[in-house]
Structure formats: structure tokens, C-alpha cells
Image (cartoon, rainbow, N blue to C red):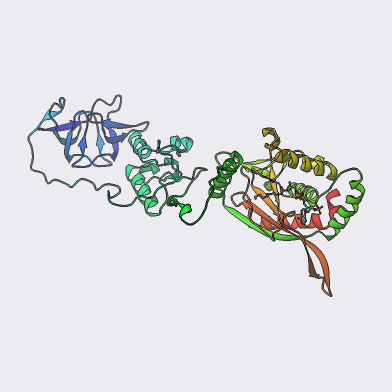
Length: 434
Ligand code: CAO
């Protein structure tokens, strides 16, 4: 063992550079090529590696110091076989305790149930990560811990992200019970304790049935939307007394031609009119969440219940179709869905989804936004109700509607305006012609 000093090597054209970061501490065991400090000139930032392996006994520089080639960075007690360092006389030094570990070894670490097991960095957004202002060693450190640098703000010079910023981010997220990969992107997930494994057969007879492919796929989509979209649901009621009277009258005429018009066809037309009045509802956020993509076409998805699970075929260009055409398409899609004959293209390109449980029952429910769409309409069973008109109660057929929307795109006031507009369209369907 010998005491050696590590100096700044040839740093090219720079005569003097500023030390912006010290990446090691007294007591650290370092290897050849380990980064020791970060230096910055007007044009570039670089890390200075160690030329020897050993234990750091003293650090001779501070953040903010100017240094140049040959400047002493630190003193090490070199491991045997370490060559290049200069031999110096040992000074008596007080040993400084090594930095405590980031997480106490005995401390329970929250389990991120959905975190990938193989790569801790799989949830890092590479675009924001690459743009983050941090040195290579901090990047490496962040990757090792699975921290998305794009989610951090740096406390260093010019907001540079320092090793300590990464550490405190991890400490904060761990103590908050959130996985360290948490970022402001679609990969955000909560750290949730795993479900206990229970042998249900100990309580009675059971049957284990595998989920269908549709169940699994739908489950993934819904889970992602539930975790990533800030949902708000606006409830309302639409007076469909006149609409139903008209539908029944039309129904009798259409029956002869084998056509059935359900309330859903009117609702689709009223939704299209409302999307035209409130274009933000006919949009999607782009992948990085910075822009809104507004659509000038009106493709309406309709949730269809099948024995294998939920599917959402899309009625394309609903704005250009009559009530009869829309009714026929719903019927065809529902039959195809139940016969497993829908093609992938039948389920693509939707702008807005309607989930109608009106044929089944229920008073209201909170549908989950079918991302990347930004809103979904839930329709429940209509019911005759007394309505006070100022002088008397009148029986009116009221349709419960629930609009769930992505609060990043739609404000609460617009949510209420949309359902109010939709209600107006449904209560006086002549307005759909205007
Ligand atoms: N209020 C009262 N009655 C209603 C109604 C409403 N809101 N909506 C439909 N009905 C009536 C219809 O008029 C029809 O009555 P008649 O047979 O007496 O004429 C009956 O209910 C059955 O309608 P339907 O459900 O067959 O037809 P639809 O056009 O309303 O819906 C479809 C078609 C494919 C959407 C529907 O069959 C379906 O699958 N619904 C389930 C969707 C679902 O699972 N959503 C949940 C997704 S999770 O968010």
C-alpha cells in the first residue's frame, strides 16, 4: 500500500476549467477509470477519471475551484499494482466515515408489481432522459436506480442534475411509496403491495377459468388508462320524451323493412353534433403530451358486450350517415363482434366512445376513457320521472348520461357544457338538422 496523489490529466485545449461536481467522497474505494470530478469550460463538460485504484484519503479540491492539467484532485491509498500515481509523504488524516447507503439494508423496499424484472430502466423515457442536463456518471447512476432524469429538476449550476438530486429523488419516492421510475409520462405507475396468494378452495368448491385474449387485452388498456389519465365524470340527464315518441313512430314504419332503430343511433348523432360544438373532445394528446391533435373526422366507437369480453368497433364518418345507416351498422357490428368476426380495422380510428348499458339497466356509471381518445359517454337506462315545469309536474322520459374525460385536456366547465349541449340535442332532435 502506498499513498499517491491523483492529478488532472491532459484535458486538451483547455488551460483552466471549473470544477462543477465532486463525484466521490473520502473513504470511497475507487477503481481505475472511475469518474472523480466533473469539470466545465465555456463549451463543454467532462468527467475526470482516476488513473489508479485505491481508497480515497483526502480530496484536495472544492466545487467552484479552477483547475488545469497536473492539478491535484485527491490523495489515495493505492491498491497493490496501481502504477501511474506520484508517491508522496503521508500526512496524518482523520478518517471520514463512508457515506451511508441510500436505503438501509433492513428497510422494507416497496414492491412495484408492474415493474419489469429484467431492466430497471425499462420505464425511462429516453427522449426526456437524453435531454436532461446531467453528467455521464449521473446518467449512469440514474439508470442503475431506474430513475428517469426527465422527471427531476437539478440543483446544480444552471440547473444541472447532480448525483445528490438523484439520491434525494429516490429517497422521496421510496418514502412516498412510489416506484423510482415515476415520471411525467405514460409510464407512471404506483407501487402497490402484491396481492396475497390465497387458496380459495379451502373455503369451498372453485373452478379456475383462464381469461380470454380479449379480457386480457382490454384489461391492459383499461389499466393503463385508469393509471395514466386523470379522470373526471360529469353526470347529467337528457329529456328524451319527444325523441322516444319519434323513434317509436319511426320504428313501426321501419319494422316492415326489417330495420330497428335504438336510442343509441340518436345518441351517436347528438354526440357528433356536440363534438362539432366542442372540438377539444374530438382530440388526442400527442405522445409527449405537448400538443393536442384535433380531428376533423367523426369516428364513433361503440362498446359491445360479447361472451369473450368487451370490444369497441368504430362507426366511421358518423357525421355523414343517417339514423338508419347508423342503426344498421351498430347491429352488424354487434353480430360480428359476438361471432368473433370483427377485423382489427373495424376497431381502429375512433375519436370518441359510447358505452351504452341502457338495454341492460342501472342508473349511472363511470366509464373509463378509451385512450388515446379524451372522453367517453356512458348511457344508462331511461326512466319516466316527474318534472316540475313551474306550475305542475309532468311525466318526462329521462336518460342518464355520464361523461368521463381526461382532465388534462378538458376543463370541468367544458365537461358540463358538453353534457348540457348533448342533452339539448337529445331533447329536441330537430336541432340535429341545424
Ligand atoms: N334506455 C332504455 N332502453 C334502452 C336504452 C336506454 N338508454 N338503450 C337501449 N334500450 C332498449 C332498446 O330500445 C331495446 O329495446 P327493445 O328491444 O324493446 O326495442 C333494448 O334496450 C335492447 O337494446 P340493445 O342493447 O340491443 O341495443 P342498443 O343499440 O342500445 O345497444 C349494443 C347495442 C351493441 C351497444 C349493446 O347490445 C351492448 O353490447 N351494450 C353493452 C355495452 C357494454 O358492455 N358497455 C360496458 C363497457 S364498460 O365501460
